[in-house]
Image (cartoon, rainbow, N blue to C red; front, side):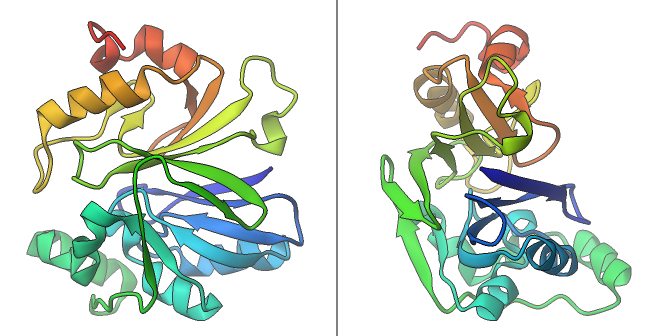
Length: 234
């Protein structure tokens, strides 16, 4: 599986591009603030054709570029049904100071237009898009509709590396050594603990975790070192 990732200009949100191989259709996950230029370069370099945009949740730093990306490729955006409402105006939940900061950084006024084609996801749903099989794991807590995407492959760059055999794109549910915050609108600490116990902990040790922020990790590592997983039993 060809796997390309890079951090957005604001909040370091990881945008991922997945494809069976160069020259094929691809999936774009969480196109955040200011990613369109670098994303276009990646698609051109690897001769990739977007088939869909997948969103792990509806916070602005994960969805800011979803509409231009979807429009340029004429593809749909996928988001969990409980976070769909956030696509109406994700900027409404952002403080004016932060908006002013990235307006100054990018030299243009922030604006929002909802994607014209939005498809909703539910827990346990299986998808086959761009030649890749994914399973939707609903894991609320950071937001009501936070999800993780599980795939039965691993990136080509680490395919020969021992210890991992499948991949989870964890969004803001699980990070290396941490988890997504639960004190924002729609966050719920109790729901997050349930998600960690019932959705995250049952993942096998050989799962590669590609989070919404920060470096990749593995379930084997997080099970031992992540303080937010300690004391939970699946």
